[in-house]
Length: 600
Image (cartoon, rainbow, N blue to C red):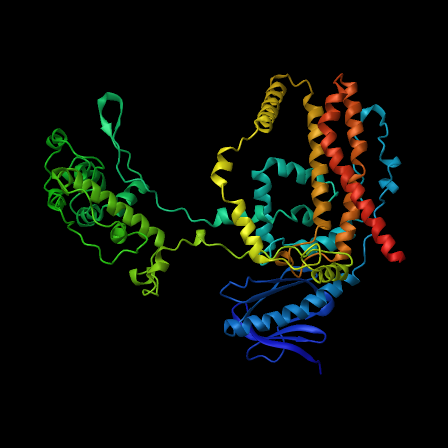
């Protein structure tokens, strides 16, 4: 009989059941059945994903060998209990997955040339100025098998097929990134998971842009007539225009339903509507008297006309009290009494022709807001806690989010640091061993500030530092303008080689430093790389970086063969070489320090 490690009620594919972790398997049994429907042995567990703490549902996803899609489990208990059950499973499964990765066959060690010595970093000539191609490791199959499973998908909780589609769109939208992917991943220098490590924000941004729902257009529906040959005017009627007119003016939809096709055909309906007073009343402009005389009387549409809403009070009252965030009169009490008496020019509704148009714009804006709020009833749109009216005007984007706890500082001989602080605190604060007189210190500070106004008026700041900074910035701008004005005499093919070499080196540097620098605690997941995998990745990237001087030397020889000044190429590639040499030197010192600690 297997021993039960932990158990919880969880659903899978919307079917309720029981999730159990024994000493040999993870199994899920549907309610009402005796045999488990899902059974995963410990050695098959490959990666683990969890939902966010703020998610309404507590979920756990586990992937296993041969099936990256895995299984999704939703804990059905109330959220506090479900969260505790999920954490128990997460802790146990994380240890199991880490043990499985430690037992995986490691790839054959990459041949990192003893490289890293200063003598081997010297550039070597390449015949005919050819650029050496990077060597593809023979152990790439094992590396891909170990790394791709760990890094697919890069974003926890997403479908691998959907993430692959997002990655493809990101590469298509960014040609430079697509070229880098083609040069490094397709040639086998780095794996797919390594390439996307640290670029999850691009995938998330693409997913967010696709999930955004396009809102209703803010433009007021106002069909414009077009003049065609012969001096005639016509209006193009499209299904979208008809939908917008019906949505903006319900009275037109009512007239359409009552007259088409019983009394009028659809063509006659729209022809007469655009020549009627009803259409003229719906125009988004103040109607002139001359235009009103041109409009013909129509017995069908004239009965749908309404009197202009030009009174002081609007004809249609709001059905509900507006939110404080949208109510312009909610802050009247904050402005106090008016000091200016109202005169003739400040009377509401003095210009009758503008009032219907203003109210039409207000109604249009209200419809836009309602469409953004969705199909919720008015009572659901307002906050439940009506007593806390202040919460209605709080903007969530302005609230400070959860701050990161930072990266834990790794220190050698940490105990000595605390001992030094303890010994220093036991000493007397005074240099001569006597205690300080606080009253004397306050009296001295007060006397020193007695004539601060006189001292401040006599303060003179030297202009030397400011002039020097301004002169330096001027020279910098002049140098940049001088470089832009000069003709670029580097051939396109050679410039492309330089760009490719620099881009590849930057990617190798990014991969190296990301494997060396500790991850923030909030970014660490169950699928994160182990220290051994990070060390292997760092050694692999150093192997590629050690070949960068050879590539640069080959580009310089190619430039000489084409009659290009090699000094320009050296100056352009010098920052890249400096960054590469710095990384190699850092790696050498780090390895030497590690070997020295092991020797002790």
